[in-house]
Length: 222
Image 1: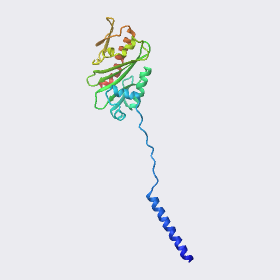
Image 2: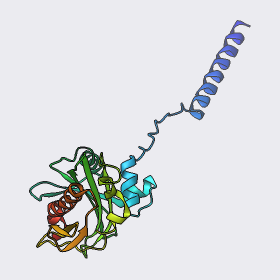
Image 3: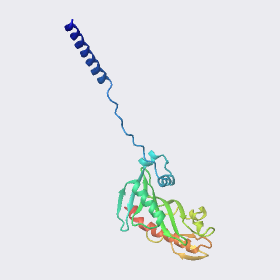
Image 4: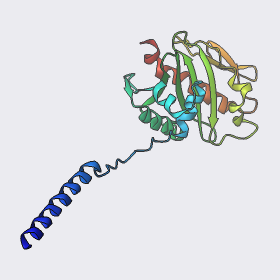
Protein backbone atom coordinates (compact mmCIF):
# COMPACT_ATOMS: atom_id res chain seq x y z
CA UNK A 1 0.00 0.00 0.00
CA UNK A 2 2.85 2.37 0.91
CA UNK A 3 4.61 1.53 -2.36
CA UNK A 4 1.51 2.39 -4.38
CA UNK A 5 1.10 5.68 -2.55
CA UNK A 6 4.73 6.65 -3.18
CA UNK A 7 4.45 5.67 -6.83
CA UNK A 8 1.26 7.71 -7.24
CA UNK A 9 2.87 10.76 -5.62
CA UNK A 10 5.89 10.43 -7.94
CA UNK A 11 3.63 10.31 -11.02
CA UNK A 12 1.73 13.37 -9.82
CA UNK A 13 4.99 15.28 -9.25
CA UNK A 14 6.28 14.40 -12.73
CA UNK A 15 2.97 15.42 -14.32
CA UNK A 16 2.98 18.75 -12.42
CA UNK A 17 6.58 19.49 -13.50
CA UNK A 18 5.84 18.78 -17.17
CA UNK A 19 2.76 20.99 -17.06
CA UNK A 20 4.75 23.84 -15.49
CA UNK A 21 7.44 23.58 -18.16
CA UNK A 22 4.83 23.78 -20.95
CA UNK A 23 3.21 26.85 -19.40
CA UNK A 24 6.55 28.64 -19.01
CA UNK A 25 7.47 27.92 -22.63
CA UNK A 26 4.08 28.99 -23.92
CA UNK A 27 4.03 32.31 -22.03
CA UNK A 28 7.43 34.01 -22.24
CA UNK A 29 8.00 37.12 -20.17
CA UNK A 30 6.95 40.31 -21.96
CA UNK A 31 9.71 42.58 -23.28
CA UNK A 32 9.19 46.27 -22.64
CA UNK A 33 10.78 48.77 -25.01
CA UNK A 34 11.08 52.48 -24.41
CA UNK A 35 9.64 54.35 -27.38
CA UNK A 36 11.33 57.73 -27.86
CA UNK A 37 8.92 60.42 -28.87
CA UNK A 38 9.99 62.42 -31.91
CA UNK A 39 11.50 65.77 -31.02
CA UNK A 40 9.14 68.66 -31.73
CA UNK A 41 10.48 71.05 -34.36
CA UNK A 42 11.55 74.47 -33.12
CA UNK A 43 9.43 77.51 -34.02
CA UNK A 44 12.39 78.87 -35.98
CA UNK A 45 12.52 75.74 -38.12
CA UNK A 46 8.85 76.10 -38.90
CA UNK A 47 9.34 79.77 -39.79
CA UNK A 48 12.18 78.94 -42.18
CA UNK A 49 10.18 76.16 -43.84
CA UNK A 50 7.18 78.43 -44.28
CA UNK A 51 9.32 81.24 -45.71
CA UNK A 52 10.76 78.79 -48.23
CA UNK A 53 7.35 77.43 -49.16
CA UNK A 54 7.92 74.01 -47.60
CA UNK A 55 5.23 72.16 -45.66
CA UNK A 56 5.66 72.73 -41.95
CA UNK A 57 5.09 69.04 -41.17
CA UNK A 58 8.01 67.89 -39.01
CA UNK A 59 8.69 64.80 -41.15
CA UNK A 60 8.77 66.83 -44.36
CA UNK A 61 11.04 69.47 -42.84
CA UNK A 62 13.47 66.87 -41.55
CA UNK A 63 13.80 65.24 -44.97
CA UNK A 64 13.71 68.34 -47.18
CA UNK A 65 15.73 71.02 -45.39
CA UNK A 66 19.51 71.23 -45.50
CA UNK A 67 21.89 73.57 -43.72
CA UNK A 68 25.38 74.98 -44.22
CA UNK A 69 27.56 77.53 -42.48
CA UNK A 70 30.04 79.99 -43.91
CA UNK A 71 32.71 81.71 -41.83
CA UNK A 72 34.34 85.12 -42.18
CA UNK A 73 36.96 83.66 -44.53
CA UNK A 74 34.37 82.22 -46.89
CA UNK A 75 34.89 78.59 -45.84
CA UNK A 76 31.68 76.58 -46.30
CA UNK A 77 30.69 73.49 -44.35
CA UNK A 78 27.59 71.33 -44.27
CA UNK A 79 26.06 71.08 -40.78
CA UNK A 80 23.14 69.44 -39.00
CA UNK A 81 19.92 71.42 -39.40
CA UNK A 82 19.67 71.92 -35.63
CA UNK A 83 23.10 73.57 -35.48
CA UNK A 84 22.07 75.82 -38.34
CA UNK A 85 18.95 76.83 -36.40
CA UNK A 86 21.02 77.69 -33.31
CA UNK A 87 23.25 79.98 -35.36
CA UNK A 88 20.17 81.47 -37.03
CA UNK A 89 18.68 82.34 -33.62
CA UNK A 90 21.97 83.78 -32.35
CA UNK A 91 22.41 86.01 -35.39
CA UNK A 92 18.84 87.30 -35.21
CA UNK A 93 18.99 88.01 -31.48
CA UNK A 94 22.50 89.39 -31.03
CA UNK A 95 23.28 90.61 -34.55
CA UNK A 96 26.72 89.07 -34.16
CA UNK A 97 28.36 85.85 -35.23
CA UNK A 98 31.47 84.60 -36.97
CA UNK A 99 29.48 81.79 -38.58
CA UNK A 100 26.57 82.59 -40.87
CA UNK A 101 23.80 80.02 -41.50
CA UNK A 102 22.48 79.04 -44.91
CA UNK A 103 19.37 76.96 -45.53
CA UNK A 104 18.30 75.10 -48.65
CA UNK A 105 15.87 72.43 -49.72
CA UNK A 106 16.38 69.30 -51.76
CA UNK A 107 15.31 69.56 -55.41
CA UNK A 108 15.02 73.36 -55.14
CA UNK A 109 17.24 76.25 -56.22
CA UNK A 110 16.07 78.68 -53.53
CA UNK A 111 18.46 79.37 -50.68
CA UNK A 112 17.67 81.24 -47.46
CA UNK A 113 20.24 83.54 -45.86
CA UNK A 114 19.94 85.86 -42.89
CA UNK A 115 21.62 89.21 -42.18
CA UNK A 116 21.76 91.48 -39.17
CA UNK A 117 23.04 94.93 -38.25
CA UNK A 118 22.82 97.45 -35.45
CA UNK A 119 20.00 99.84 -36.23
CA UNK A 120 19.11 103.26 -34.87
CA UNK A 121 17.25 101.87 -31.87
CA UNK A 122 18.45 98.27 -31.73
CA UNK A 123 19.17 95.20 -33.78
CA UNK A 124 17.69 95.04 -37.30
CA UNK A 125 17.67 91.88 -39.41
CA UNK A 126 16.69 90.63 -42.80
CA UNK A 127 15.85 87.21 -44.21
CA UNK A 128 16.35 86.65 -47.95
CA UNK A 129 15.27 83.87 -50.29
CA UNK A 130 17.63 83.77 -53.26
CA UNK A 131 17.54 81.68 -56.43
CA UNK A 132 20.99 80.13 -56.57
CA UNK A 133 20.86 79.64 -60.34
CA UNK A 134 19.77 83.15 -61.36
CA UNK A 135 20.94 85.05 -58.23
CA UNK A 136 17.53 86.72 -58.10
CA UNK A 137 16.18 87.79 -54.73
CA UNK A 138 12.79 86.10 -54.59
CA UNK A 139 11.55 87.10 -51.16
CA UNK A 140 12.51 89.53 -48.38
CA UNK A 141 11.44 90.03 -44.77
CA UNK A 142 12.82 92.63 -42.35
CA UNK A 143 12.44 92.80 -38.59
CA UNK A 144 13.64 95.19 -35.91
CA UNK A 145 14.12 95.24 -32.16
CA UNK A 146 13.34 98.85 -31.27
CA UNK A 147 13.03 101.13 -34.26
CA UNK A 148 10.61 104.06 -33.86
CA UNK A 149 7.01 103.39 -34.80
CA UNK A 150 6.02 105.43 -37.81
CA UNK A 151 9.66 105.84 -38.82
CA UNK A 152 12.37 103.15 -38.77
CA UNK A 153 9.84 100.44 -37.93
CA UNK A 154 8.55 100.83 -41.49
CA UNK A 155 11.38 98.60 -42.75
CA UNK A 156 9.03 95.69 -41.92
CA UNK A 157 6.27 97.03 -44.17
CA UNK A 158 5.69 95.58 -47.68
CA UNK A 159 6.07 99.05 -49.21
CA UNK A 160 9.74 98.98 -48.22
CA UNK A 161 10.44 95.23 -48.45
CA UNK A 162 9.01 94.87 -51.97
CA UNK A 163 11.65 97.22 -53.39
CA UNK A 164 14.32 94.54 -52.90
CA UNK A 165 12.43 91.63 -54.48
CA UNK A 166 13.16 90.63 -58.05
CA UNK A 167 16.66 92.13 -57.99
CA UNK A 168 19.64 90.18 -59.27
CA UNK A 169 22.71 90.23 -57.06
CA UNK A 170 25.63 92.26 -58.44
CA UNK A 171 28.99 91.03 -57.17
CA UNK A 172 30.97 93.85 -58.87
CA UNK A 173 29.36 96.72 -56.93
CA UNK A 174 26.70 97.35 -54.33
CA UNK A 175 23.58 95.47 -55.30
CA UNK A 176 21.44 98.22 -53.75
CA UNK A 177 21.75 101.98 -53.67
CA UNK A 178 19.73 104.33 -51.47
CA UNK A 179 17.86 107.47 -52.42
CA UNK A 180 16.74 109.64 -49.52
CA UNK A 181 14.93 112.95 -50.00
CA UNK A 182 16.05 113.16 -53.63
CA UNK A 183 19.67 112.61 -52.61
CA UNK A 184 21.86 109.60 -53.33
CA UNK A 185 23.01 108.33 -49.96
CA UNK A 186 24.48 105.04 -51.22
CA UNK A 187 25.42 104.20 -54.78
CA UNK A 188 24.30 100.83 -56.10
CA UNK A 189 22.96 98.87 -59.04
CA UNK A 190 19.30 98.96 -57.88
CA UNK A 191 18.35 102.21 -56.11
CA UNK A 192 15.62 101.99 -53.48
CA UNK A 193 13.78 104.80 -51.75
CA UNK A 194 14.51 105.28 -48.08
CA UNK A 195 11.85 105.63 -45.41
CA UNK A 196 10.72 109.20 -44.84
CA UNK A 197 12.02 110.50 -41.53
CA UNK A 198 14.23 107.42 -40.98
CA UNK A 199 17.43 108.21 -42.85
CA UNK A 200 19.69 106.37 -40.41
CA UNK A 201 17.60 103.18 -40.33
CA UNK A 202 17.27 103.21 -44.14
CA UNK A 203 21.01 103.59 -44.59
CA UNK A 204 21.89 100.91 -42.04
CA UNK A 205 19.43 98.48 -43.64
CA UNK A 206 20.85 98.93 -47.15
CA UNK A 207 24.40 98.66 -45.82
CA UNK A 208 23.43 95.45 -44.02
CA UNK A 209 22.15 93.94 -47.25
CA UNK A 210 25.12 94.92 -49.40
CA UNK A 211 27.66 93.73 -46.83
CA UNK A 212 25.65 90.61 -46.01
CA UNK A 213 25.39 89.52 -49.63
CA UNK A 214 29.16 89.83 -49.98
CA UNK A 215 29.67 87.51 -47.01
CA UNK A 216 27.60 84.81 -48.73
CA UNK A 217 29.24 85.27 -52.14
CA UNK A 218 31.53 82.17 -51.91
CA UNK A 219 28.46 79.96 -51.45
CA UNK A 220 26.64 81.29 -54.50
CA UNK A 221 29.59 81.24 -56.90
CA UNK A 222 31.00 77.84 -55.99
